[in-house]
Image 1 (tube, rainbow, N blue to C red):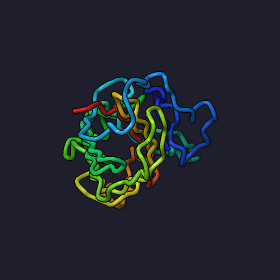
Image 2 (cartoon, rainbow, N blue to C red; image 1 turned 45 degrees about the horizontal axis):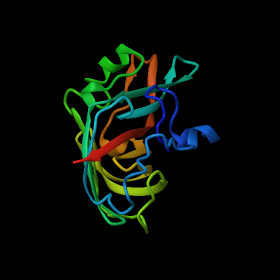
Image 3 (cartoon, one colour; image 1 turned 135 degrees about the horizontal axis):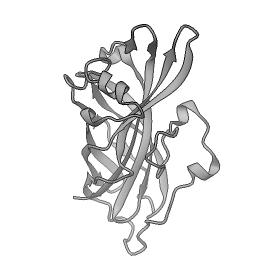
Length: 217
């Protein structure tokens, strides 16, 4: 699972594929607002742009006849969305990512994805919509990180599948930080495994990652 406040670089952030150090898992409390009383997170929040806000993918590529593996990581900072809270219940979450803005460390890979794989020219958006409210049990204290499971409809490549995403969230008073990940099977979304002339191919699964900051609407 992606941890809160990781750098916006392609360094690994998905717990499903690696171990996270104790330092990486400790939430950064420097943005906590001590003047905001508990119980006032109610209302609607919206994704606010910033260097720490993105939606992306992490996939394994196989190169050449020896099947040498390398990791492909791409992220888009063009994300919008809303989150609604009532008491200790997260009532709704809707997030939209502009997939045409995905960037990795290789321009050739990014260009290829416009017409191959997730085909961003034909399917420019990915969305997630919560389908089951999340009961936190109690209102978290300002600065407290909580781990939740969010079940919702994920739409990629024009196809929708129900997923349960593991998220870590923290209410800072004036913002809410959310980070997480979920595995993606290409077959569930009608995605053909990208390949380049038999030289480079992609495994039939990937990880979708996100890191978002919400501000009060």
